[in-house]
Image (cartoon, rainbow, N blue to C red; front, side, top):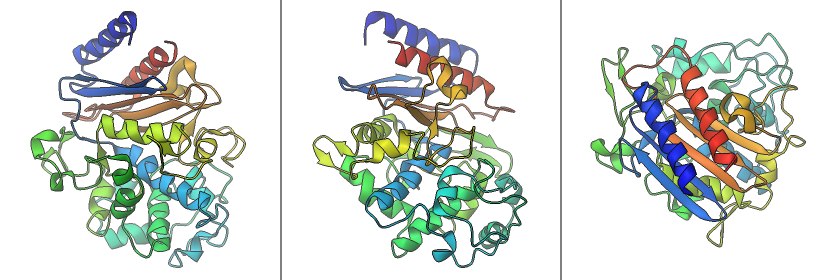
Length: 347
């Protein structure tokens, strides 16, 4: 990092802390020159709930690995793996619809949080769609929950935690990543996410997302609930930018970078930014530097990854944006993410 960049970065984070966007954050950068990490109000290896970044690390990337290995077809019918799916259009729902969030689920998962886990799942299985799969973009948790179940079925019942460890966490040395962080680290090493009225306690080391928290009684779901650190996520995104390799080891088959960053291959709904798990060219959190070869993902708790496939460069942010209380919308954290992206990719 040059002196001008370092100064601008510190000013950006100090301003966000002063205005209450977050009080703790870690940011990391990876490029062909190596990795750099800066921490604000906490330590570099602090563990955060990464919320919807779970959808790509590990869920959708596990699916893409199965696709590249020939174990899963993007155009396979989901009922081949989940016969209990009995929605209308059940014969038309494909694996690619789960990855691109092009199913017409209009139920906010937070509205189901008081149901037992089996009823939450049944609500998704029997949901009645108004529009045909692939014709509408409707980002949310249901598609990723179903994708996680598909991955469990094709692996003989292995949980996403077990699959993540086997395919990514152990090969990449992501020693502080996974569900159930208090089985790996001390509670004080995990950054608190919220003073939660629904549970009546501070959420620290347990899943913040309500539906993912309830469903964890059955298994880790593909939509949310992963915990990680900036050093671990830098390894993960570096592997993708290197088209499946990390430090000379082949972690994924070649072709993954094209799958996550190509407008041509994703089959997404016209005009929407979510492709095969990742979001492409998303101005709302990539800022004015967004372009056709940038991919990324955000999480409700204040997490994000933004990467440029051509420059082989990425920035990872973890923060406690939802602490002590969540805000009404993500406008302030998205404005910060945009400025961080602009700073990163213009230097």
